Image (tube, rainbow, N blue to C red; front, side, top):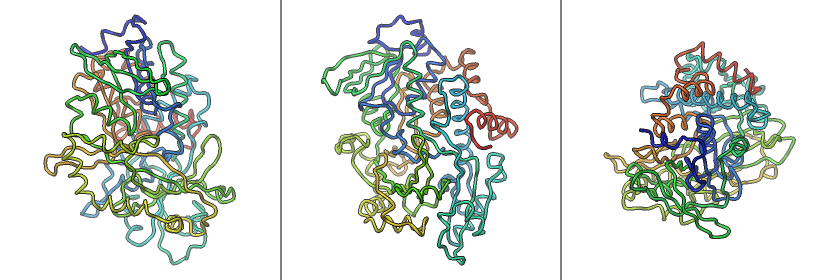
Length: 506
């Protein structure tokens, strides 16, 4: 029996016993809350956030790349194998997952839950850009591998300087004609404001009956009840008042704060996980003339030893209706798990069950640690030199350094080596489906719809079999249950529809 099947009666519960508790107000909690309220409108949902505003951590526009991660331009999703061939399997998964996200967002517009798609999504071409013979050869191979699949129809490859000047004139200014350059272009790319999308979702949710939000509240105690469900204590950070609540289901969507809460929950499935925090910074252009010379997202190759989130890119962003230009991110290291966290976050997360995995992962990632230390110690001139590889004419006075978000990469137990550092996201769920936590980072926000659908399958197994839920999911996501990677006709139909509704290039 599903752990929620016995509580889905209309408004029978006291507010202190909500059907669902969401911890954190990022895109993940917003997406899950939206799904559940659409699928089961009589649910009582409570949301807890330790900050005084919604989407102020990783979902905020200034704290993430804002790239609709669709694997059009991100080279780390298409590694070259030892035999020289290109592995596109991860790219295919991410492209499909982003198509799912776009379908749900189109549903939000169709239902008039959000008035204007331009508040959170824009068409911005996605480019990969490399220099040097070896990298150009790799990019051509990547293009040839991807363009065989219908997901990447319309992708263009060029090594011609004149073509590249049309694509991104700012990057091509003052370059030698002798320089070996190569790039791909995908016009279907997007720029996202995930903070704005998250706020839209919560605005809609909070207008529904039975949904309550508690800002400035943190969860200080979490315990599994003997007969199922959870007891938890929420503390008001401002008044220090604590209240005890009960619920049959908790989702921990607190970004970097998810790991400490998962440790508090003490579920067997959460044992052995550790976290490796990586911070980021952007160079933000403040010269309007320079900003207007660029209209693309251009991704390069990560340096050897760099984490995937440190792939350098020059991005056109639309934030709060205004065009911006960002370069980075420059990686860094802090023991905080959240941008607004504590320096004690990392040491406090160390436990008997994750000590070996964390130490083992550390030993196997010495180049990464060295890279992060070097990044932290960079001078303004060194940061400018990295930018000038992309924009040869860049001047230090046109750019300002800003803090970006804090990410916590997953460290997992591994029987062979003790522990491994993983880049990506992972849903950790209790065996009975009563609690779930999301760990990890990129490409998280872009694939939030897929991730939350996977969580629903894990935690609401019986409900997901109900014809009502199945029909509603197909209404929200027309391709639900069918592989777009294997169905070219459906993919084209879905893309044409979402592009029209979301007012995107197609």
